[in-house]
Image 1 (cartoon, rainbow, N blue to C red):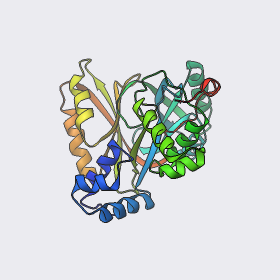
Image 2 (image 1 turned 30 degrees about the horizontal axis):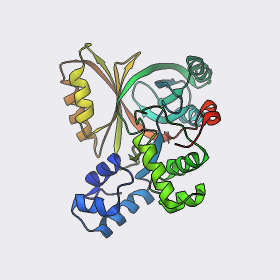
Image 3 (image 1 turned 60 degrees about the vertical axis):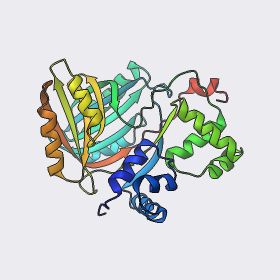
Length: 306
């Protein structure tokens, strides 16, 4: 799909607030409402754009967030398919570079992490894996920075589940599914957003078949990395970034319409004083990107209305 002139601004606004009204979107961009509405629907229908809710990992009880690079001795597509089927993975991509597959996963305990890595190492098509743990997410829509002291009930869970599929589903539809009034649905969603239990944001498709090219990067720093964090937060091409420990001090995803634009951003990153080394890998085929995760059983048992 060819990019329209309004796309970057439209997607940027939806990243900030996935439920921003068409009226407000049109007013900010300076184009007619019908144009904005039609273009947004075109992006969604083509699979270029999704607007979805993501449950904050800490609220869901997932305190260990990891990034793993896989070197395959067999078909990378088979490895990616196996990883896609595992409920602990939230992102899986076939990549080009020194490794063949990259995936992100979430866990409540170290034991869960150890168990999954053992299973991946046992895949007959896997020759080696390299895992880094995220320390903190510098930039990324799926982390809402949950404020604590919030519990939820069946009404909230029903609406969250629907928003994980479509972040712009109307309040009336949410209310009907949850058995409450539209005003109650609106109030509950507002409280979940205010408490940072969920975030609703735009997610762009990326890969060689898409209009956006995605590159993963692993950064080794000198230890004084304030300039790296500032770069990650401010650069538009940075779709996701996290500080980490393991092979890399930072892991990020860069997204742009062309390889040339990504090359420019990579050079800017490499030129930072705190950067010692940058490894990069190209996302060829993102086969899973599902940041909405099921709540842990302990929360289900203790849940009560927000």
